[in-house]
Image 1: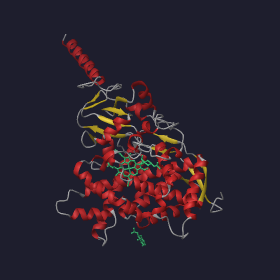
Image 2: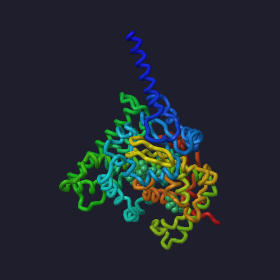
Image 3: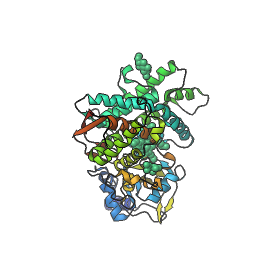
Image 4: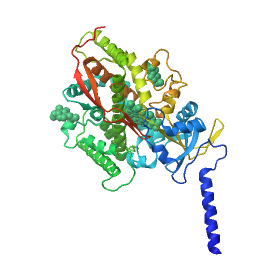
Amino acid sequence: MWALCFGALVIISFTYWVYRWRNPRCNGKLPPGSMGLPLLGETIQFFASNPSSDIPPFVKERMKRYGPIFRTNLVGRPVVVSTDPDLNYFIFQQEGQLFQSWYPDTFTEIFGRQNVGSLHGFMYKYLKNMVLNLFGPESLKKMLPEIQQAASSRLELWSRQDTVELKEATASMIFDLTAKKLISYDQENSSENLRDNFVAFMQGLISFPLEVPGTAYHKCLQGRRKAMKMLKNLLHERRANPRKHQSDFFDFVLEELKKEGSILTEEIALDLMFVLLFASFETTSLAITMAIKFLSDHPLVLKQLTEEHEAILKNRENADSGISWKEYKSMTFTFQFINETVRLANIVPVIFRKVLREIQFKGYTIPAGWAVMVCPPAVHLNHKKYEDPLAFNPWRWEGPEINGASKHFMAFGGGMRFCVGTDFTKVQMAVFLHCLVTKYRWQAIKGGNIVRTPGLQFPNGYHVKIMEKQTRFIST
Ligand code: HEM
Ligand SMILES: *[C@@H]1O[C@H](CO)[C@@H](O)[C@H](O)[C@H]1NC(C)=O
Ligand SMILES: *[C@@H]1O[C@H](CO)[C@@H](O)[C@H](O)[C@H]1NC(C)=O
């Protein structure tokens, strides 16, 4: 009898629990959608990789079934997915008020607890200013010759090799440049290779979080630990031998650490360093790789891009001088090309936020404590805003600015947390493209299809042969 009662009780509470799982408490109307299986939610469907360059099937199917705003459950957390331009805009504008940056726990574990993505309020603004200082327009102007030097010497090196794996090669170029800017790290002067540790870190990033020796996840965490140790040693070395002129991020950090009552700690500075290095070389190298792939696939685009850059060379008074800031600013088609590249590449496929207070939006209620997920691919591939959205067409950016920029273009995020590296990325891409199209031609050898997952997207083994052009100028 007791056993029966107990059994009934278990069944009733289990049923109730499942019912609650499927129908979370809410003071209003939740967006439509399914919470998936108890505990698992729809996590497995979400992580399926996407073989097309279209909106991930997970999102696309649900948009069709439920509309632009729907609910789901990922990694144990109720989530509202937004593909609605107005809601996205609202989320970006209300940063810090109604929403707060949030990433799944495994991310926090991997990237460090104090990383810039999870820092809030005052501390956050303060760190952001440090970064902006380093990659603002004034610094970039001064950096032009250095960036050009890095691009042309790499291209020269690649042209002497049989083939290069583009993603790997560009990542190495961008990493070296960024590490030099941030911490004056020069691989040639170091016994250990900092980037190797980042590569190990990278490879385990989208793995099952099981920390047992031998697993990719283990290697990932180990890569991070080693990289952090190197960064720490570099910082200590610098502290022991301070430099007269503040010139990189380390100098800045050391200066701040010395100040009485500074809120910056060594830990925070190192975590930030790690995130910055990672955020900068992975994204930009992917953008450059995709740019080259789009150029290979679209000869007319390559032609116009080449013409723009050869015209710059022709109009230059001193042929040997490097790219000037004025020339950089005049690269109209190049900027259209860059916008189109990052639109279609969807380098950052998901942006997460936590809901701080209950939100009413378009008749739906989103309870406090839920997560919201903004889905940039759904915005960038919206056929109502971009005609024939899957086509690579830089000319679509011509003429009057596509208005409401942040509503329909969010490759670099939006609102207060807009990517601080946007200008740095654009300069690097433009300068690299300038060196590439004026002096080299290339041939794709193999690979190049893109592997897309909700975490990261990367071209699979894209090998090209880079050759110096016979004639400098294409006669028109
Ligand atoms: C093609 C290249 C890049 C793309 C597509 C990209 C994309 C993004 C996006 C979408 C965000 C917003 C994330 C969010 O709202 O949660 C972001 C933030 C950020 N990016 Fe980038 N990024 C690129 C290059 C860079 C570079 C070169 C740097 C380093 C200098 C950088 C540093 C950062 C930092 C520090 C943040 C956090 C800003 C904040 O939370 O306020 N990014 N990026
Ligand atoms: C690396 O070593 C070379 C030669 O010793 C030196 O000129 C250069 O400044 C060093 N680079 C850094 C970042 O310390
Ligand atoms: C590229 O996109 C940004 C952001 O929407 C916009 O401000 C800029 O004008 C665009 N560039 C071109 C050349 O259309």
